[in-house]
Image 1 (cartoon, rainbow, N blue to C red):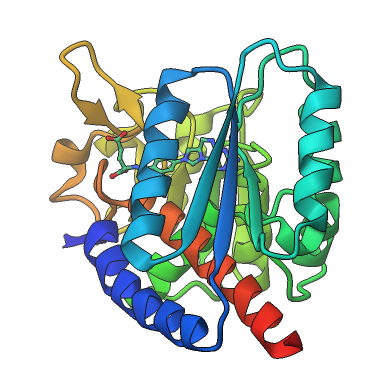
Image 2 (cartoon, rainbow, N blue to C red; image 1 turned 180 degrees about the vertical axis):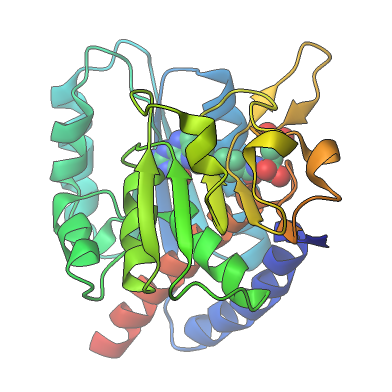
Length: 283
Ligand SMILES: Nc1nc(=O)c2c([nH]1)NC[C@@H]1CN(c3ccc(C(=O)N[C@@H](CCC(=O)O)C(=O)O)cc3)C=[N+]21
C-alpha cells in the first residue's frame, strides 16, 4: 500500500507558500486571514489553533476573533460586514458549527464571495458545480491535490463518497465530477451501504464513526481517503476506516491523523495567498 502522506505534502507546499508570501511582502502586500470562532467547541478550538500556527509559519497575518457563546446573528453579521469592507483583509473564515441560535446559511451568505476562503458561499458553490473558477472548500480541494500529487487517476473511475455535508461530501462530488469521475454520494438513507462502498475504485469516507469500514467493505486494490476524525477514549485519534486491517488490501490510503487534515489547512493558506495576489495585481 502506498501511504498518501498529507503531512509531508503539506510541509512541501508550506515552503512554497512561504516564498510566495515573501514576494508579496516585497510588493507591500501582507496576506491576511481572519478566523471567527463563536463559543468554545473543543474540536473547533484545536483546528483554529492549528490554523493560526500554520499562518504564522508562512508569514500570513492571521487574526482570531473569538466571540462568546451567546453572540447573536446581528452581532456576527455586523462583524462580517466590517471585514468585507476592510481592504487589508483577504480571507474571512467562520468556524463551523455555530451555536444553535445562529442560522449558518444566513452567516455564510453574508461573506463577500471574493473573501470566502472556505468556498462555502452560494456564489462559489454555484461556480464549482458549473466548473468555473472560484474559491473551493478546503477539505475537498486538499483531497484532490493529495490524489494529484500521488498521480492517482480519477477520470473514468467509480468514486463513492460517503457523507453529503456542505463542507465535504457535496463539494467533493462536484470536484470529482469536474475531474471526469463517475460519482456516487452515499448517506444515512443509503440502502446496502457497504455493498456500495465495495464497488468503489476510489472510496472517500466522511461520517465520523471510528473504524466503521473494514476489509469486507472495500474493493481489493482500491484507493481510500479517510476524512473521519474520531477521538477515542484513550485520547488517540482514528479515522472512519480500519487502517491496520486495510493496509494489505488497498493500493493507497490516507492515514488519520496526518492525511487529509493537514491538507485542509494548506488549502486555506493557498486560497488566502491567491486572494492577496489579486490585491497585489490591482495595486
Ligand atoms: N468554517 C470551517 N472551515 C473548515 O475548514 C472547518 C470547519 N469550519 N469546521 C471543522 C472542520 C474540520 N477541519 C479540520 C482542519 C484541520 C484538521 C487537522 O489539522 N487535522 C490534523 C490533526 C488531527 C487531530 O489530532 O485532531 C490531522 O488530521 O493530522 C482537521 C480538521 C476544518 N473544518
